[in-house]
Image (tube, rainbow over the protein chains, first blue to last red):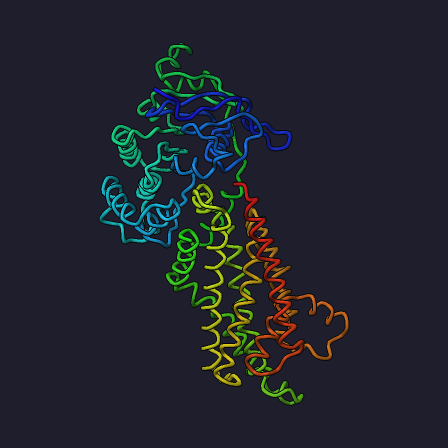
Length: 264
Length: 248
């Protein structure tokens, strides 16, 4: 099995602060790989570098053999992403959001329509395709985002805390779909989550990042064995400690609060 | 081209589907037309300047285009905060296509808004010099939209939060509007104020619009056209450059 994602000595510094500190790992083709860590550990910064949204301060990345900094557009065509925060256009319908994505990824119209139908049916959204996304529940929006991320048949799917804020039923359904997709379309999945049971359920290997460094890497079973713990959550706490990590409310959080206030 | 078109279409659909936004955005121009047009009309006429409604209507049209095009650009802040910008930034398309699609969408919306205000003005009693004048006026509406669409994009590319948006509104957009001669004639102003109005690009937009619609201009058609074209090129280039530097 060849590596679909290869990261060597990757770093990201913001002034004096080092968010990601010299990390290396690889993800094999067709693998489901979980990237876990406490708040502010460097998970999202790593995903942003992998997906070309941030320039690394040092190190190298290869996505399907391509350097995303030098061959940015080709690399972007190879992956789909579901962001931590929703990124759908809520005034547009589900079908229109898919259409917009398909055009941005240069898909021929016939293929766009075929893939849209297949994916919306798979994610049980076909009957609601003509409704504006603003009427969708959180779970439906997440399913639509994953369907959209897969529209252009990417080889890698990045999922940045995709189940954040979802109820257990929606989370269960979402992971069932992701697992099915991984098996049917052989998509390599790189995910982050705070829910340990989810990581254990879907991931073949897990990397734990803390303070910008990878502190453990292995299968869920290996992590438990190496830490002498009985559950992945205990292993995670053993590796990263029990101190609560608070991220200060970012501008996005503040704006969301303002928007909620405004809607009231 | 596909990316530019689909992002342009997104802006237009968003506008057309948000009926509350359409109605709300017409409220302010309507208030200026009615309250100022009819309220100050007698004083304006008594001072020998003719109908104030005729004078102020092009200013109010310019205001509608200014606000809508600026907000469309600054709307990048919303796209950034609510996630949609990330979806476009990771797509395999050049950033210039993204900024063009978005800016052209904003300009289209601003022009629709301007046309709606012209229709309201006509209903209120405004009469252009001729129907051809409306076509000439459309050219200046387009130029105003290009100038402030570019400025909005430049600002939207740098803004990080809502507080910044309020600052831009209070210390940039409102002064641009009030110092443009939209509400008062630019003749016989105190020197200091005249110097400031000369630096305001909207002054040339409103002047061109007024010249086209009612044949009354301060700077003249050529100066208005040249200044607006040059400022539009400069601000659209600046907006595109700053957009290309966005990091999320």
